[in-house]
Length: 431
Image (cartoon, rainbow, N blue to C red; front, side, top):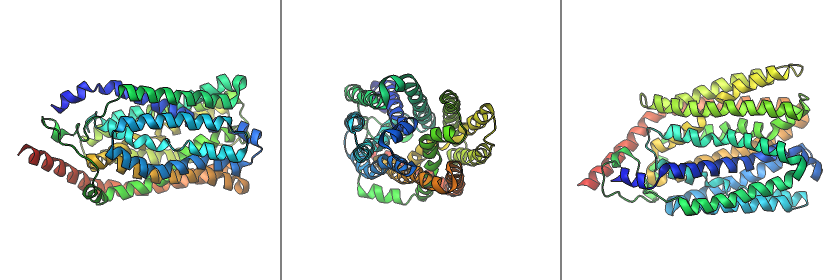
């Protein structure tokens, strides 16, 4: 039975390893924003050059998504994830030892190679957990974003003055190699589509692999195009904040390192709670209406846009407590889309093309993400860092609201099409 197969594969052991992978990987990715001023000082670079640092790894990751997506839909996913983890360790370590800015720009960009492996991880997770719980599971996995942020904050605060930013990168790089070994040892693949409800009573689970008819069927899901557009703009605010906010709080608001630390910890904790709430709310509303997950996304985008505009317009003379409280409330809604967008893609994509579909989503998101830090760095010179952050973040959130509204209108037809296809496969297999 498929259910028994899933139990034998110990899904919660696998989930624990995936949580460790994402947590440490996110901490490694987010470190650069917290040591950016040290890097600027060591290499004597301005904001525009620093913005290019933020864009490099994101561009490399974007180019890698089609390749990783194809490989994950054709081959054993755990082996590829283990390879990605080892590459994470090696490229991060390499970026820690170079001594010139051009070399650092190249090696830091190379750390994006493994970033595009995430769709394979989420695809494998989807085959361990049923559609009814995917929002919560994805919410748990995406907790690693804010918790990774907090972990990187703690590491920088504890170790930067004693061992320096280069040795911190060596430390996080080593963790990637360790996680790669754990994935290779303990994570096993499961059949694609094993957790779909139509396959629950099948004793002979069919094998699904990427083929062009499935890709053509995927391209007919009109909801995807709305999700792609919102994905391009939706990543701007998060990437701007994680890359530039430490500089902004110190330079524009004159907060000391301890104040910045506690403000960002509070915001990250709030974001974590919001991610879990969003995933659970998406699952609950999805059981009632097909648009449920996307309505949660739309709520998060619109509320966070209004709150961010209010927060960034607080006078620089405002107390750190007031600003920190406003930022913390805003952060709660920031990642409402995260767990629900992934689950929505799996609600409309056939099992054999889910990694490809999510890789396409992340490819487009990374193109947007690569633009965000660079645009802020360029606008900063003419309108100031605070205004540049506000302009980029609020305008892109408003656009996301438009595209998510379109997705809400399109999603029912695409979900119905997938369920009918899975029922037909189950019927043909049983006959």
